[in-house]
Image 1 (cartoon, helix red, strand yellow):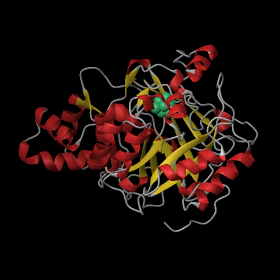
Image 2 (cartoon, rainbow, N blue to C red):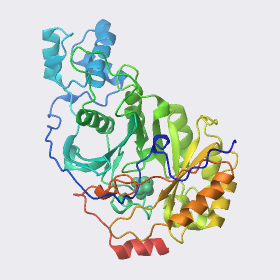
Image 3 (cartoon, rainbow, N blue to C red):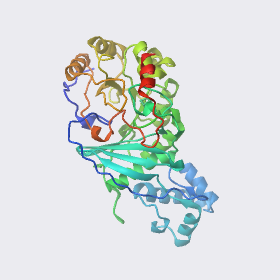
Image 4 (tube, rainbow, N blue to C red):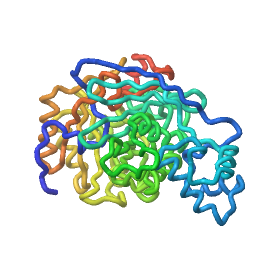
Length: 412
Ligand code: SF4
């Protein structure tokens, strides 16, 4: 691999993930934007695949011969134009609009609040059915923007550096709740075409999606797959698979399926270079240790130099940040087209770790860079509103473990 230009501080435009820790003054703007949840007895169309939508329309009385056309029309209204009211779907006959309204809704989750960081990062608190809440983060960048979405309420995994990991799993999100986060963000950004106007071109406010919010996306595979297929559909949100990155802690058996059934970019929550340390930081490593994980990555079907796997590496003072760690890291990933994202640790209440010193991070980055890998250090984004990587946790899900519990797990 050719040696990339030496990155000292990350160019955020090449970094798909939410960013970290800031020294900017804390300013917050909290809004409450109520929105209705799906009504009982009617099916919500948001999150249905094209096939499911077709079946639903036929079951409601759409003649089979018209079904394909109707699916295309309804799909475009929902995902290309952002229309939620059947009455506004003006290329459908009035009686057909009435039939749709009788049987269906077009509902997205409820936006409870929006906080805006001093650096423009937006954190949305989103309420889903059952009153549960997840967080979604929008990170604006020059000429583009990344939405970090959640796939579960809480998480079954207990990565010890992650705030979400202190919150027990409540439930998986549905496809509609996952893709609904994208629709909500486009609402908030005002990114739908004006009535009668063509869809906006590729210069978008929301140009990338990362599945790096709350939850392990590969433990909710089918819903994540269906939601991302909807996001990629060229007649709707129309994001290229190269603009979608799924981050996993290392659910080895699902890695090949991710390539085959979703085809998006892959990021690995890596964080350690020995099984001993990774067992503590990312406990799923006890099930699928480094050797098995790296084997699965070497055979990741989409692997090529133009589609590198991103290795996320949180820098924890005195835990995983030595020069020896850096050397072991490049040895471990040798042969895998890769980029290493170095993440200065984002602190949260009760966190059992500290951020590595800047000089240590730079020294680590230099070793990785000299071995031929891009090693950007993420610039701070959204830390003042607890929107940075590893800080997400819904405010009302207070199943928080105590500091002592976390410390005990860390020491195990
Ligand atoms: S890092 Fe991801 S997989 Fe690990 S606890 Fe946090 S949300 Fe779960």
